Length: 136
Image (cartoon, rainbow, N blue to C red; front, side):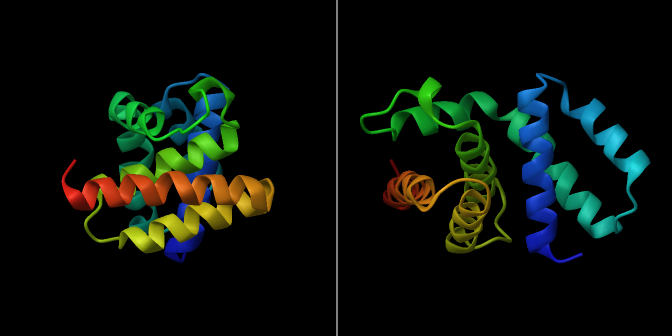
């Protein structure tokens, strides 16, 4: 399984966990029972899925800080969860270039929403990355 496919799968699991207000362990257990994926993909999915929810306070406060003219509650859930995935990768996965993570999040949002939503996600993530690079 390619990293792109593993990321899309992880996004879906993050989204499902969020929408069902479920713990990631339950979502992952059911997923693994119903699907056969490689050990490498499983490690990535586990790390990111559990990492997003372990660091949710930091991730969500980072998103909130960079929402210009938006309230956190108004962000579309698909966009929100794509942002969460990408922010986790940017801050906690040194093996993934930030630019790749941002592009993949934008592609995910384009798949499920509109180009306007994708531009919004790109803008938020670009601002977060610039701030991180400046050490703020």
